[in-house]
Length: 204
Image (tube, rainbow, N blue to C red; front, side, top):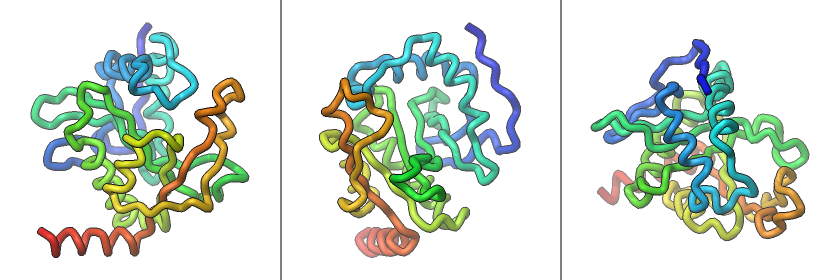
């Protein structure tokens, strides 16, 4: 299946860190994207897996999903080798009745063979700085299935605070997967981000 990537009014590369490039998606990312969407370990807390055709179709749309202010799901690339690792992004949560319309969510997914290297935390730190410093976003949330300790551990490392009053049952998780419905929420404000970074500087 061919993947068509349409030009978009956003830079090919959004951000770079010491080890990563956060960029738009390329047709050459297909195999990595297929791998992520079909891996039972990566998708353990999701009620579905995508077939290769479904994964290819979704990949072809990802560059179209970027908003005018640069929010979207960015591919992660290892700077040293140019190989894709997974993705990290800032998107509108789009959950009426659960979050206000302007709520921005940060999320990520990484191929299992790259776990344990701190890549997600590094990418998310860059995106939170982009959100609060460059885009003046007032708050960012992240959420995951209550038992997804790997993902919530990243939220804690980022300094996000537990927002227990915002926990919810995910409306797009079917009743056939009740153990995946309850989601816990973490949040971050610009003030918390500034304090967190100042503390890290003092501890360095």
